Length: 290
Length: 263
Image (cartoon, rainbow over all chains, first blue to last red):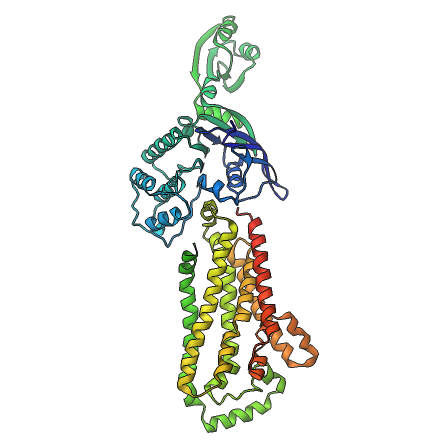
């Protein structure tokens, strides 16, 4: 079975300036794909290319195995999109915008809209221009989901949402996933997506540098290894690990050695203090960007 | 979508129409008081000072401004062509770019509609407003002129429709120019410059036979007001050219907008 979304060596240049160089990933039906990278890494360029806002330079964007046609109404009906900065028609009331939005889809959006409005606690009688950033984002979430799309593209969706609403939003996404919706979730905060994503792709300088399941990423045997000893120099030469910080008698490594191998190596030295602790996902993420 | 387009552009339509109506209403009200036999005599004397070419440029060689209708055909019509031309040009510039100015194009592009449908709804709304403005303003002038005296109704009817042949192509040209930009502020100057330069070229082309060729470089020559006044009919060749220019630039806008990147 074809993946729902497949990007093959997607490249976008603005003249001579690189947007993205080589972006490839696959997302299967019912998967949530975390698209992680710092600002300027190419996340939004990738998403805007998928959405047809900008034209790719080369590569492929396949939807259910077929090259995307941005002018195909049926294909576009499959998508729900929440941009990182949402701009809507200021002169409209929220309820009128929802009606307007629904008028473009050949399905009844009302019950899903009602459900989402209730969950996100949206006042439909307010004018768009009177909404706070958080409330505008909530309206954007309803617009992205009210037509029950098969594919949802989210670009930094939680910016502006308070922690309670972030939780509500993630619960909504998990329910969407249960219903078979395929979700691309872009963020620069790994811990934000770690609990809901099946797979994570790390993008740096327009290239996907690492892709794995969240379980595997957590399984990587990276730990902080803190050693206090008079043999610091010898230990450092022997272990050949990446050093985080170092003083005369204390050193912190990023350790990826298997525990028995580590103990075996350290047994040769006189150790005053040994501390091994799990690397938080955020630090792991930063490690990729060094 | 078209319904929304009509709603969005309604306010500016009302303002521009109101400006035209107020200017002309003031003239129609004060005209009988300022144009008396005495003042007309001195105006006629003054007219003899102007070279014939200048009078031709404002159609004042063919008509007397002793009546409100005479003023309407000469100076008044210059206002109409310019003001509706500027409105059409600004409308063409803003109608698509407004979505980029307000950054709503990202939302609009995510909807299941073809880009060509976006252009179509803007074009239909824009051209409709231009034509409605010309018709409503024509109706206002008709009623006002009926009150002020008798006039050639067929000639008035044809003259009133003439701005369509200039304004609609101006709208289409501005729309096309705007499709290459991302911000209306940068295009407004170009579009308005095009309107005024085009008008000046048309005026210059009337000054002498040596520079008559200039009319081929002015969109205002499509109005061909002299022909309407002289023959009481349209120059159908100009009408066809107006239609072809409009169709061509709208078609080019579709092509350009379909390729446009929204970054």
